[in-house]
Amino acid sequence: MADPLTAKHFLLRAQLLRDQVPNFDEYPFSLPAFRGFDTIVFHPAVTFLIGENGTGKSTLLEAIAVGLGLNPEGGSRNFNFSTRASHSSLHRLLRLIRGVRRPRDSYFLRAESFFNVATEIERLDDGPAFGSPIISAYGGRSLHEMSHGESFLALATHRFRGNGLYILDEPEAALSPIRQMALLVRIHQLASEGAQFIIATHSPLLMAYPAAIILQLEEKADIRPIAYEETEHFRVTRDFLRDPARSLAILLEANAEEESLQAARRDKNGTHAAPEVE
Image (cartoon, rainbow, N blue to C red; front, top):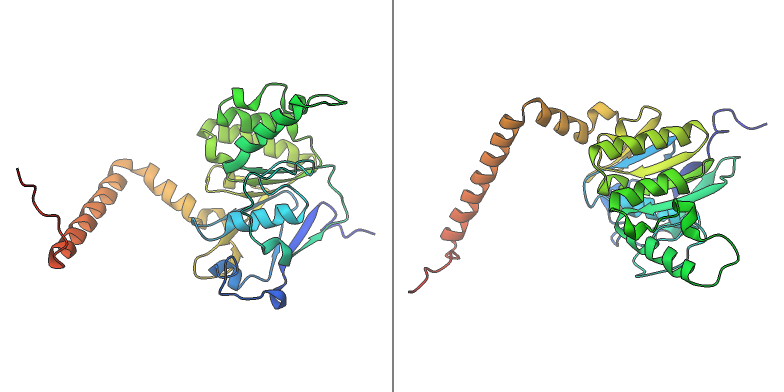
């Protein structure tokens, strides 16, 4: 009999095979979050991966997607194109522990390369086919004829069929706040029907979703769960919106002080620019 605590999962855990890592001084294992990384546990509905730029959240998400058999540049299992092979070797040393359920659908959305996915769809549809055009699964309209944000929502609305495992890398990149909330509603619809999401994001709007766990990749630690209200994304946004004028004044004053200090250092080192000769 299936464990009721894990029966809803498609993906339970990801474990780094630390004893097989050749060198923790080489990328991506040199990233601080991976030095202490052993096992992470996923929420059956939504797991958010957050962290500052360069902490490795997209690298980890990519490794999970590739380990699941998805195309590194995005798409489903049926996509196998490669514009530039840039994914890391992390997926080879990442053990994915799956639940008793098997997803009927799976997809990897990588915001930075979704343009390439749209191009590949058009290339495949231009060739001989024995079934419906691929673009019909995305709403029937070319993704290149939409704005970036519209194409993201078309993907979530039409292509995500439900009962699937969806890996999303910064889906908010092309979305306005209103469109982010529309995506959040779609995520909720699919999660309520049994879908599982793993999402790397900077968006405080998305990570407010209640049926979720937030895992933070830190610059000087490993990967740990964190409460929504404790995230820097929430606190910075909250403080800014409480008093935008004061926040901007502090920010710009600090920037002016930093520029003055840098100018003083340049003058002291004799590296200031020579005056123009007329």
